[in-house]
Length: 137
Image 1: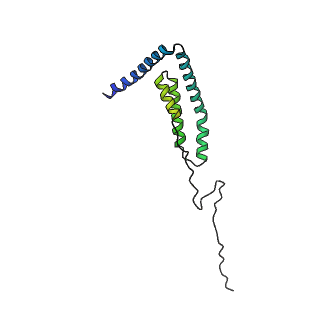
Image 2: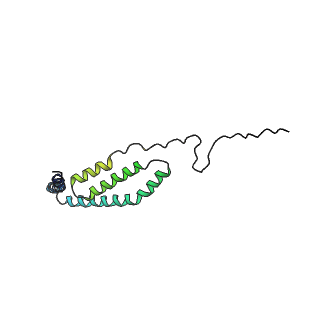
Image 3: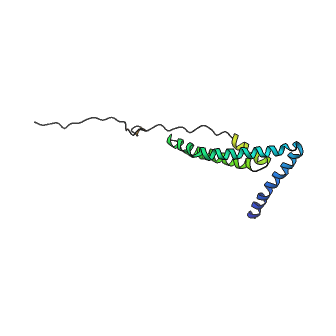
């Protein structure tokens, strides 16, 4: 039963997209081709941009002492949106726009260093007191 459900979804969504493209063609005509080409070009541009910006953004986040989950989640959202833009259809483009415009939330706060922890330059701050043994002469 689950296999049939997957087949129905795999064949049904492209069929719905085709029907949507046909209905849009009825409304705006040849501009539909321009819209589909522009959406695919934007999707390819977005995919290429994420490909080149992912590792520097991840390295910067890790060096700043933040967890990488926010960067990974944002990159996955942008890649999925790019793939949805490349796939022709109004529904996939609308879902891609939702993914791109979804508010990310506030950036993660850096935890304050604990007392006695090492600074970024490797210096460990602390206090000391010199105790000399008392000489008995």
